[in-house]
Length: 455
Ligand code: F0G
Image 1 (cartoon, rainbow, N blue to C red):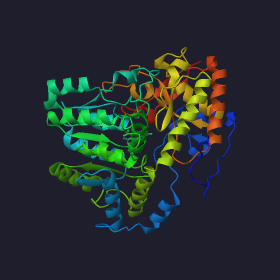
Image 2 (cartoon, rainbow, N blue to C red):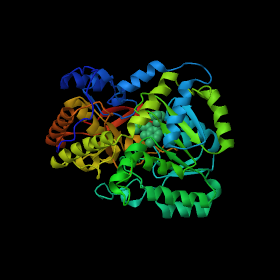
Image 3 (cartoon, helix red, strand yellow):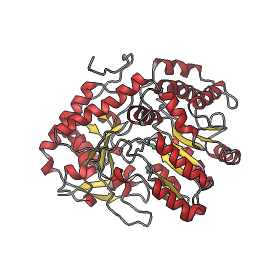
Image 4 (cartoon, protein in one colour):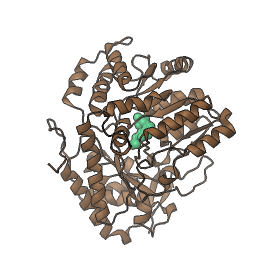
């Protein structure tokens, strides 16, 4: 059959409250035109994030009942640890309540003023946690990633030449090298196995550890299977093991590719670093066999990790986003190509060329998607990245809007509705106006800034 169907049936449903454009205009004004301040029951289709928004399976809910809530030595922890290790064979697996807690623990130990932490592209919380220690977060993504129309299959790759140069010139300042799979901030683009291995070789030659941010590891492995020479006949789980076999540790948000609503971990091979991380964990998260999670959460993650490497699921997952991407292109909506694993990224700067980057074309598009259709998406551009640590503002390299698809939540008719909302935005695009910021914090401003539309 030609149609790739949702490979699941629906047993439990959540109603969606349908609002009107008039209602939503009032809600936007009360929220300071910041979609993070909108209540989710006022959203029709919520594409703000794919993080923590997955529908759990019957098996996961069953496992939740098995959760053992003992403070120390819970069997739920050992099931979690075994499930992680089956895919990612690290010596120390340290649970945290979500990915950024793992980042905060790692960088509180190895960060600090004068240090430089390179990656393909750091996610915003990773960057924030590095910069909070006084260190510099450096993005070294492959040059093809800067062109949204370049169809290169591995636009998440790290630029090996610049990595080699950085380590050659200032290895003493670099505590670790990171790789984000898939590269979320760069459009959900995958990193090839060849690039992971080549990066590991360079990093290890300079005596440094490679830490993978593995949030969307299964989607990345699926792209490797589909796109990388010699990988097509291999099992996704085998590819996953190869991706992590050359790394020295990982940070993970189980809210993505583990189908969990909360959770994460820090994994390390280095005994001394792991001991320091566990000491820190006890202060901030909890005892090392629960780390800020309930036993039931650890159980949900263990089952989720098993389900996420299912190839029927991954085929459907990636196809959903491609389907939306194809329809948007046919409406003339510019998107980042190829379509990434967890989201479609719309090139708002190109769609709305009459809105200057410092008037936030991405935010303007996200606001109009909500106003016209009740769709909530996320700006990834000048609002998210434009405020520099010294307080100055610069246009981000791109102004994108991310349509992040929750896992196993929406159906094809939701996707078709989304495309219809875009058709209306396209029709009105010349009337859309930029915004200005009325108030903002000094860091991670996109979460709490308040805006005002320009006249
Ligand atoms: N790294 C990447 C690549 C991420 O995408 C995220 C979260 C994190 C780390 C932090 O994990 O949320 O569990 O603390 N990304 C979400 C998103 C929030 O919407 O992309 P967390």
